Image 1 (cartoon, one colour):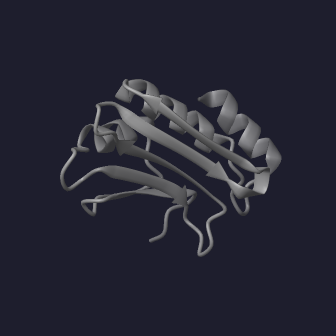
Image 2 (cartoon, one colour):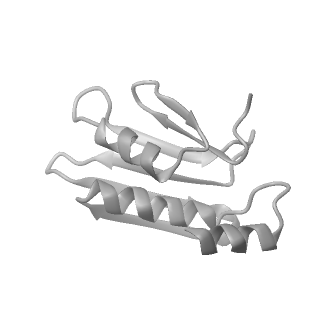
Length: 113
């Protein structure tokens, strides 16, 4: 069964359909600097128009990338708090466009986060 909206994948092969903020927190918490260095979240489509990622930095902390081609958005930031990263990514993803989801549903999703 495919994800309804998006899926998260880690370098080590972990996969979660429609991850919650808590699931993202756990996936990011499991990152390390040897064999599980990043998590990517993207729309569960054949040609995803957006993605977000969190990757371990050599000097500590994480690099966060948010890219949405349909909105001409590309942001790269760094952060240290896994809690903040998971929350911010969840809020950002709630504002993305998904096939079959109306603007009203998107606004309701954004308001509930």
